[in-house]
Image 1 (cartoon, rainbow, N blue to C red):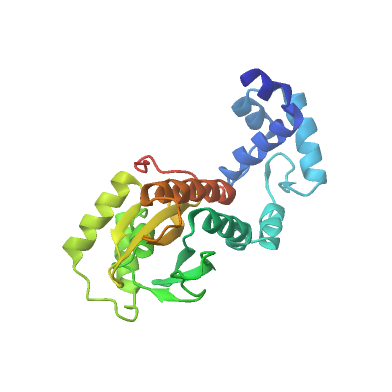
Image 2 (cartoon, helix red, strand yellow):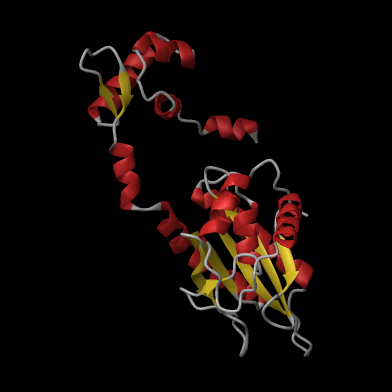
Length: 265
């Protein structure tokens, strides 16, 4: 596998990306010599790459001409296709595909100013199912989506989230000890699986979709309904595995990374 990867490498592109990533960590800029030393490249290699990056507008030179720093071009490009919008746009067909396999609905939730909002929804293919409408505001401490979004944040961010949160319709008052217990458990196993705190007979499954910072940028959830008729559909454990795999795929699409504490059970 390593030999195959080496076969398709693009050394010039990698050198350019190395320069961009290094400059991103040095807002004050670096000289050509500093770049060459840090990247263990020859000054001539760095000069050729810098000339191209400057010409294309990704890197700018200081007024004195001896230091190089990133321009705002990459930021401008990123704004043409916001990452959250890209994740939702890419996620929806994948969410619809998994509902056809699992025969269960699928939702994506995000936090906005303390509210937990459903930003994407895909219904199950059967005659019946439980689906939340896009735009629905759900609870923070009594839903799988809310708990997962809180679990994969710093303790300080959790405090801010709780202070900003306005209780959703039907959401009970916060039992802080109970909530902290759920967060600790979710951080340990990597996801939430819980009897619904709002509807009888539903098992809520929720997985984090991680952003580049390692925090949960969104949560992928499934309100699992067990069938008792003759239709053979995936079991609860199989559904957990399917949705967990999709959450990891969406994390990769978002450019996210798994925190060290997140494991898969």
